[in-house]
Image (cartoon, rainbow, N blue to C red; front, side, top):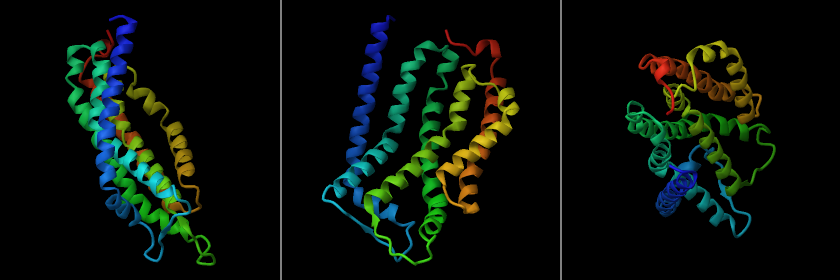
Length: 239
């Protein structure tokens, strides 16, 4: 294929992915109130959300629709991504398309669920209780939802680590030995990321973030080792 043909195919793939996202976001928009109620559950029972301008309900609705629309459309988006890069792979490598797409969607969804049910119920009460009731907090709906979705997005991306490691290993771009060699460096980077995501002095919240990062890194090493045992290193190349 020529460069122009590649660009045209890329345009078509992006267009299909965007259409899928818009349709899925429209479905999420219909159920936005139910989703908002679900997102409010980690809050302490004596707290509620407030709106401070007339655009806030609309902006929050669009954030919810956009994020959960992406989650719903992730299998189609993953398929379009794979379909674009698949022509450059060997037939043996292409057979991993379905596991890759399913694994990507499941990993991201699981990361979102982990953030919602494991991290946020512990993190929010601690963050909101630093002043021990000496102040009254008027919690903005927009501020609350945007930060929750950021948490969920970060964990969704982090949980993609084993799936992406497997793909990169099959393509010969990642090897297990360097991952083991720089394990300590990865641990430090993971701790820095965890500290940035949870800017509190509370060790529980820190380990709720740092723990999964370290575990997923170790899982990624095992996944890379397995992937590279399945095929000779010399065969893991692009055309």
